[in-house]
Amino acid sequence: MKMLKHYLFVFALLNIIGCGETKDMNANHKQMDHKWQQKINQYAVFSLTTDTDKLSENEKKVIPLLIEAAKQADEVFWQQTYGDKEELRKKVTGPFMWEYVEINYGPWDRLDGDKPFVPGVGPKPAGANFYPHDMTKEEFEKADLPGKDDLYTILRRDENGKLIVIPYHEAYKKQHQRMAELLEKAASITDDKEFAAYLRARAKALLTDDYRPSDMLWMDMKNNHLDLVIGPIETYEDQLFGYKAAHEAYVLVKDMDWSEKLKKYIAYLPELQKSLPVDEKYKRENPGTRSDLNAYDAIFYAGEANTGGKTIAINLPNDEEVQLKKGSRRLQLKNVMRAKFEKILVPMASILITPEQRDRIKFDAFFANTMFHEVAHGLGIKNTVTGKGPVRTALKETYSAIEEGKADILGLYMVSQLHDKGALEGDMRDYMTTFVTSIFRSIRFGAHEAHGMANLIRFNYFTEKGAIERLPDGTYKVHYDKMPEAMRSLSAAILTMQGDGDYEAVKKFIERYGQMPATLKADLERVNKAGIPVDIRFRQGIEVLGL
Image (cartoon, rainbow, N blue to C red; front, side, top):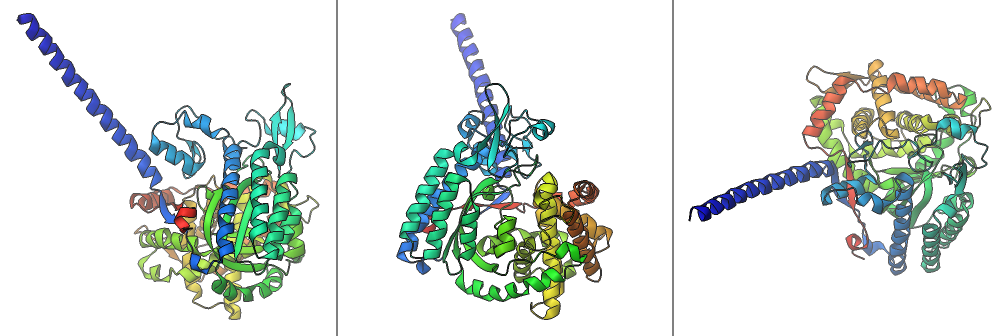
């Protein structure tokens, strides 16, 4: 009997211990889930929709094909930024962590300086997965390899460990062939001849890596209701050299009414180029006169476009030759822009902007500032005046940040010019206050990211010039009387460095103005604690559209 009682006691004790361990495990799981949920909640959810009643039956048939093609670009981007997605999945614990991996397209936090957050994963390679991870800059520069710095090649090692160059259409053959098939099918269905011609040319480009002909045809589209941006485009992901273009895609539906309102601004481009506050030699290039401005509803994002801070406006093509011959197209993604304004910009202003200036945060000003940011990408100079070749290659990895900085400040400079001419309505103080508030929004993307760095530079420069002042209560005031000179001098500085192709000067400029002040860091932490999202993520696809 005593032995039985002993066993019962031991059993009860083990049961109590086991229950305690189970409770501890459950508590740990809940704590981890809460941690990842907080990370995920940095991105407010927004559904990408449009008025499908305005679409024709053929357009409704084309859209699923474009979305499926975009998903192929998504697969390629995974390979470019990380590698084997399924191999990474094995390292991830729990569904919430995996959801955050998918948001970031990898194990590195794009809103926290690309810090690794998956156990066992090291720092993110500066060259992403475009180059061998053990390759040094010196090895690359010494290598005699034709095409090594081409936009559309990756570098790998052969069986002897030597660097080799592989064209995109070979490296990503499966996805490129599938994209091409889908674009050809969409071209056979659409009633828009210009759109069909572009889709067929883009399909061919994916099989050859010759994108210029399709870029030219994309520039010729004027009356299209649907639009598609797809393929290797931006070089932000390559932080080693800024040479390699990452895959992305946008599926878009044009807002015909808003687009009509924007047409008038294109006529001002040559005049705006001539009025830039810099020596004549830095503005001798003439922007193409076939540029256009249009507003769209975005209905699908994929690849590089779908990472970190989401794009709200597009200025393409990036090809300098196409820009000089035909200009560029500026696409304002109105529905996504509205989401960021309402979910992020306005709530941030209630914390960071001095109360008497908060009523100057206006959506029309946000739209115009963003629009002219994209216009400004096409202004200035594309080829150095010092014989160093294109600005993009002369400035290497510093190009993306300084180019985004140029577009931001020239955008506001152009707004002020058009406002002075009476071509733009509203109060200039609204544009300035909204612009400054958006600086804070973009800095939250992180200084490692081109747009975040560009805005941090501008914040420090404006503060130095007295155009922005931090008040004792922790809010910021815009000094409208000092903004024009700060705008002018910063525009001149950036345009000059770009025109000279002065890599060392740009590096020093970034080092000087690209540092995060402790007070600003603390102020942005107040925004985080208030639960204001850093950016947005999407519900998207055929089901969301109701097709």
